[in-house]
Amino acid sequence: MTTKTIRVEYLTRVEGEGALELRIDGGRVASAQLNIFEPPRLFEALLRGRGYAETPDIVSRICGICPIAYQMGAVHAIENAFGVRVEGQLRALRRLIYCGEWIESHALHVVMLHAPDFLGFADAIQMAREHGDMVRNGLALKKAGNELMRLLGGREIHPVNVKVGGFHRLPTRAELAPVAGSLERVREHAVALVRWVAGFTFPDCERDYEFVGLRHAGEYPFNEGRLVSSRGIDIDIADFDSEFEERHVAHSTALHAVVRRRGAYLVGPLARYALNFERLPAAVRALAAEAGLGPVCRNPFRSIVVRALEIVYAVDEALRLIAAYEPPDYAAVAAPPRAGSGFGCTEAPRGICWHRYDLDAEGSIVRARIVPPTSQNQPSIEADLAAVATAVLDQSDETIRDRCERCIRNYDPCISCAAHFLKLSIHRA
Amino acid sequence: MSAAARRVLVACVGNPDRGDDGVGAAVAAGLAGRLPPGADLVSCSGDLLALVDGCAGYDALVCVDAAAPAGSPGAVQRLDLASGALPPEAACTSSHGLGLAAAIGLARALQAAPRDIVVFAVEGRRFDGGAALSAAVAAAVAGVTELVAAEAVRLCGGSMEVAADA
Image: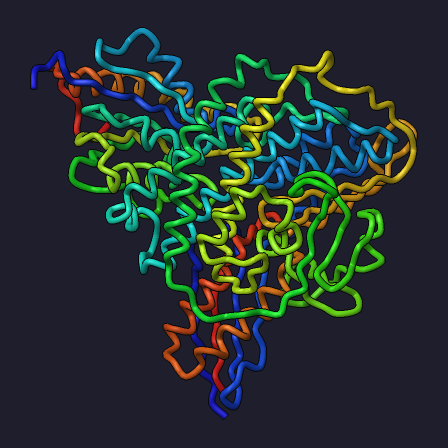
């Protein structure tokens, strides 16, 4: 038996460090493993013994691109443990800052990291020479998202203004006005981005995903909702462990998550979109139809279109929230600590991010558990890799490698969040 | 173009709370009030996305940033990018933010970059969170500040000579 090995030492345009090993035996893909070898970052252990008030600032350090996801998961979980609910304009401001994160994160991925795959460029800098207008649009969108994050969060990377019970400082209407101006200016860029990416050529690929995400009674979800799936799961977020399980696997320092009864599932834009299509405003649904999408999209390569649609949604939602903003009398509600457990689950740009904290009577953290989206998607990434590689198995190793790298980038994975960089090995027997 | 019409952007890059990565901020503090008319000073920390369109409209860009340790902390290298790029090893290690090389590369691809770009790279020793500048880098700050000020004068159309390598 002969074995052929192909290695990609450094997969570009993915955040973090990992490797892919593809084993081809007897003309079929025997296994596809996403090997995450980045050392565990130990945030959950680091949180033990820390005060509840420190938590939003500590967890925001998990990620530079989606810190709000971690902050929101943490504050909602702690408030849940303390029996506190944040309502009204404070709740609206939390949606607003999340809009900022979706805009900047999605714009970065769609234009700078993902689009080059469809146009045959090695990176966004090379792409910019021929598609300068779209790159400028993407950068303007990211800038607008950052502006929103900076105003509400104090700074765009690792924001410092989120606290249990609300915020440290509230924005004024006057401060929000120029941000609204920026958002209004970039809205047409967001729409142009949808039309641009919808015109890309996509590989034929339909995957039978179990979509998992939040569903709220009336909103496209950010911070609240029941945890639902396309195969019937409909639970309170506190019951996550009843349906989902995290497992150690030998080839990853990040835990794999599965539906207990079925296995791999998908979180992120495709899942959110499929589970909440009717919650999107009519204008976004119409744009989706124009982009060739129905209410459900199962082609992972088209996730770029859904991300672009979510940028439009986030811009519109941010503008709506700003227009309706009346500064409340207080920046945060009282959140006196008490012993207990609390749960938080929000829709990070890459999918649901689930938190559980056990706290003592003084509000010190006894135990923390954080389930980030990329670790949940690992089994699904591996299933996609096997399917995608199978479809091009008769082609060159270079083609297989290229298609596999693209397959991984469909997920906008943040390996650093999950535990960082990709090395691809293909073994042919 | 007349000397008075030339505009120069001086960008001091780095996180002041990350040890020697704070050399840019330290140089920026020293440059306050010392730059010639026509030169603007900006400090950049974290993602350098803002530099991509921030440098548009300028005739020249001068950057100060920390460089990875290579055995000579505090050593200063002047890189003239008028006809080249930063070395690949200057690339940012994260896909989630633009480093200096990517920001300059992208600005050039978008035809937003000034023609003249000079980077002063100061070799660091430590980049720990919350750490101060190392002694070697702290000792280099005054000299780098002089070099950057002189470069700005030269690029604005002044006559001060700047050494090819510091």
